[in-house]
Length: 144
Image (cartoon, rainbow, N blue to C red; front, top):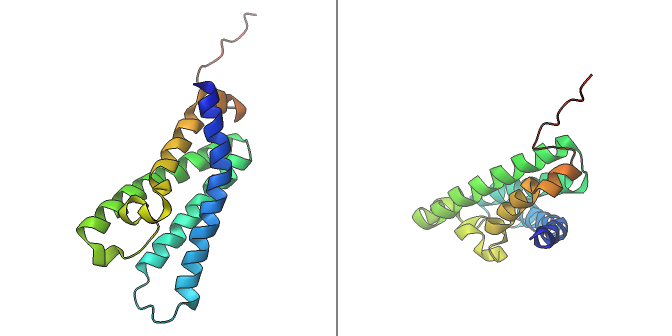
């Protein structure tokens, strides 16, 4: 199981920057260069997703205690937004439009749905916690 979780870390280190670039490029194009855009919520949501992916990438790249918290926060936010927007894209499709989180990330191979969950599993894995300098158990203080 440890090798599987370790592999997840490598996959995340590659997939998150790729998703940040693709989603961010899509958002910038739709917001600033695409003609005839009159409804900006989908583009804004895609931009927020791209920023979330970028923040998570920073947390994966630098193994510090604060970056662990940064990644956990970004992935938690991403998970919640994917679920909310995914549901709303079925119940209110005109409101949501075409965004990265539409239909739980179907346009992106469902990566926006399962990627943050894998990321959270990896971040809470004991070996990963040690790499970030976070211990799940308090160490006993030495006797005087």
